[in-house]
Length: 295
Image (tube, rainbow, N blue to C red; front, top):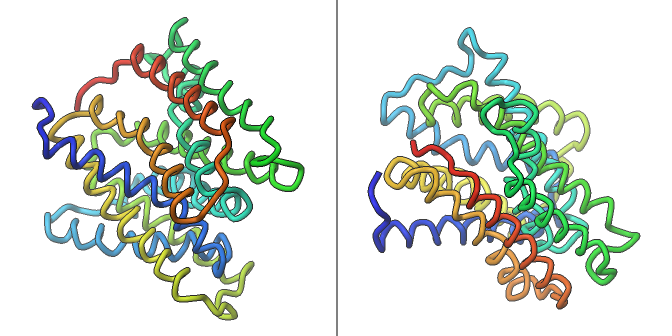
């Protein structure tokens, strides 16, 4: 792994901008699309460039190999369920709030890893980072302008979505010796398989009359925020390593707040900014004391 140069740092910021912008695009997409259909179309759009990449690089897709059950489970927990839950939550809360809540995924993951991965136990300082980070979330729930009786359940649903990302991440470790392109494409294909019948049975998408804005946002979510973003992430991982790539966690909620304010004209209170700082401090303390192995 090499030390990051200007181009590497630019790619990291680009990845943060793309992922940070995903939340207001989810919000716009929910204006016309129901959550399951939204998730389905998103993963269909994402699967196309992934399939092309595997074809170009001659990488075998093992979605239906003897380990298909694991690929299917990861596709369900790491893609299908969180995509649906985040769409449900973001439809009723500010887009930047969704970005902030999702930024705590590393903290949620650390708690699960403590119990299910023997080499990922929480130390005192890592635990302190987790406590501080989640304290920032608790503070958000005291801001009645942002979270109130009408939408607090949807904020909790968004947090649940991030928790499923963590579960999916832990399951993905069982495939750590497989090529990233294969794992991502295979699990994405399984998410399509799960979401397709649910969309048809529950939401009757043929009755939708989506706006151009919602459709463009959904196209962006699939091709850019999922497909292209994954390719950028993979490039950063292979060139600069996991430690450098994880720094994107600090930037995503910041860009989420900026886009929410500038694009969606969402109200930002001083409590939101204070909570964001507390959460980022918690993530910093946790990551400083959690040195992942470089790939």
